[in-house]
Length: 157
Length: 211
Image (cartoon, rainbow over the protein chains, first blue to last red):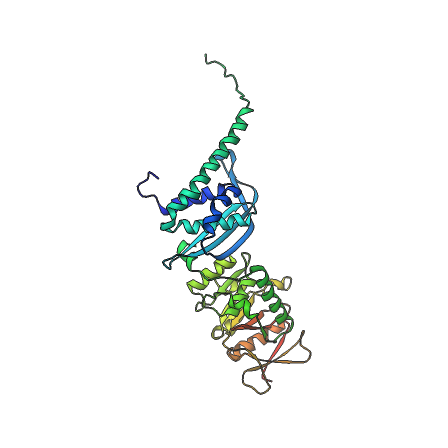
C-alpha cells in the first residue's frame, strides 16, 4: 500500500488471491456478518468444473499437463446505493460452493470505494494474517524434520 | 469479458439445471410431434432477462448451447448484448459462417433457400452431426385448411397429417426444404420459434405447401 497509485486490476487480483487462499472457516467467520447486510443478484450460481493444471519441467523447461483439478466459480452482482452496479467473481480450488459465492460477494463489495477500507480492515487483513500464520506453522512442522543432504565437492586443484 | 459487461449482462435461467431440462423436454416433445406448437413454461421465461431476442429463443439457446457447440447468429440478431449474454451463460463458440456452425439462428426474412444449401449436413455415415436451424418468427400457430402460407406435414410422429402456419417463412425456403428430403438420412432439423412458443420440423418430416 506504499505504492502511489496501484493499478486497479493488480489490486483486485491481489485481494482475490488473499480470499481464494484463505481458509474457508476463517473466511466465513470474518465475513458472515458484513455480507448479511447486502443484497446480491446471482449472475452465475456456483458451478463446479475441471481445469487443466499446466506446469513447466524443472519450473523453467517445456510445458506439460500436470493433471486436472476441480474448481468452483461464481459470479454475483450488487447494486450500489448510488444505483451503479458492480459485479464480483469468485474462483476457488475444490468444490466448496458457499466459499466461491462468498468470495464473489466480497469481490463485488470491495469494488465499492465506500466499503473498501472497512472490508480491507475487517476481512482481508485478518484473513491474510491467518493464512500467513497457518503457513508459518506448517513450515515449522516441516522444518523440524528436515534432512540436509549435501554432496562433497572435489576440491579444485 | 470485461468488468463493465459483467455488470450489465442479463440474467440467465433462475434454476439453470431444472429450467434447461424443462426447455429441452419441450424441444424433444416438439421434435417427436412435428409441427405441434408448444408453449414454454411462462414462469421460467419470466425469470430470464433476454438480450434483445425473444424469450423463447433465449431459453432454447440457453438449453441447447454449451462450450462444445458452435453457433452462427444472423447479423441482425447478433448484437453485442446478445453475443455477450450467450457467451457468458453458455460458453458457446462462434462459427465464422453458417456452414461451420452446429446451430444456426436466423430471422424469418433470412430463411432463404441459399442458406439451407449452405448448412452442414455431414455425411451418410454421420448424419446426426448435421446442423440444426432455428428460425425466429413473429407468429407461429396451428392452422386451418385453406389459410395462406399453410404447410401440410406428414411422416413419423404424425398420425395422418398436420397443418402448420409459419407465414413469415417464404415459400421458396420450404421448396428447398422439400428437395432436401431426397437426401435422407442427411438433412436439416428445423426449429421454429416465436415469442414463447416453438414447433419443430425434423428432417424426417415430409413437407407440402398448401393444405
